[in-house]
Image 1 (tube, rainbow, N blue to C red):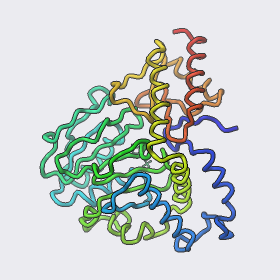
Image 2 (tube, rainbow, N blue to C red; image 1 turned 30 degrees about the vertical axis):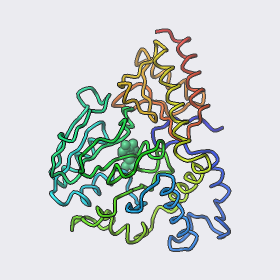
Image 3 (tube, rainbow, N blue to C red; image 1 turned 180 degrees about the horizontal axis):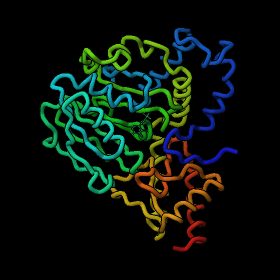
Image 4 (tube, helix red, strand yellow; image 1 turned 135 degrees about the vertical axis):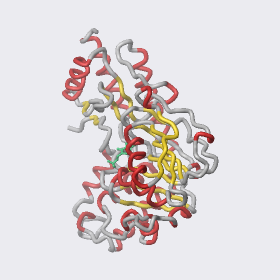
Length: 360
Ligand SMILES: *Cc1c(COP(=O)(O)O)cnc(C)c1O
C-alpha cells in the first residue's frame, strides 16, 4: 500500500513517474539495458542529459545567458562551491540567516572568505524573514546568499530581496519548481533534487554564465562551475539514474501544465492546511503569516505527549514522516509538488479526529 509521505526529504515522487521508471527499469528506450547500467558517454544517456536540461530551461524559463548544471554532493556541497566560484573578486560575501541551512551556508562561506551576517531571524527562532533593503549589504560583497524556503522552520521569502546589483545566490532546495520565479532576479540558484524534483544524488545549479569564469585557483575541480559547463556536467561519472528520474518528473510537470499550474495546486493545499490549523483552536503554527511556507508546514498540538501520540497514530493511518525537526519539535507536514490534494485532505481529517479524541 502507498502511504502519504510527509517527509521533508527525500520527499514523495509522483506515482505516475515511479510506474514509468518501473516499466523502463530493465530496458530503457530499446537500449536493452537499465539507465543504471548505461555509460554516461552513450547516446541514450546523452539524450537524457540534454533533455533534462532542455525541460528545465523551458519550465523555469531560464534565460540563455545562464548555464544549467547537474552535479553531486547535495546542496551542502554548494555551500562551499558558491564562495569558491563566485566569491573571488573582493573575497567578501553577505549572508541572510533565516534557518539552519542558511546558517550552515554562512559557516562554510566563512571558511573561504570574509562572510558577514547581513540579517538574521534567529532572535525569534526563525519564525519570520527579515525585511531586507539594499543598504544592509556591503557594496563590495561578491554575492549575497539567501535560502528561499526554510525547510525546517516553515518560512519563505515573499519576493527576492533587492541587492542593488550585488549578485544574489539562492538555495532553492525545498521550493524549486513549486512556484514561478524570475530566474534573472538571481545570479545563481541551486537545489538538491530530493525535496521536490527527484531522488537524492543529483543537485541542480543554475548560474549566470559570466560568474562561472572567476573560480578560485584552489577550487577543487569537481566544484568548478567552468569545468562542469565545459563538460556539460559529464566531467566524471554523473548520478545518471537520479538525473533520469528528474527528467521523468519534469516531463510529468510539463504534461500537467507546468509551474503555474502546480503553483495553484500548491497554494490551494497550503491554504487548506493553514486555514484548518488557524481555526482549530488546538493546533498552532507559530510562523508569521506573511512568511508561511507553502511547502513545509510545522505545527504543534497542546502538549509534547500529544505530539508524540499524534505522530505515531498518524503513521498507523498511512500518514507518515510527520515528526517535526528536532530544532522545532511537534509535527511538520512537507507538502511538496508530489503530495496530492487528497493527502492534505486525509491529514486534515485525521487532525480533526485526533483533536476530538484527545481534548487538551
Ligand atoms: C535539505 C536542504 C539542504 C541540504 O541538502 P543536501 O542535498 O542534503 O545537502 C540545504 N538547504 C535546504 C534549504 C534544504 O532543504
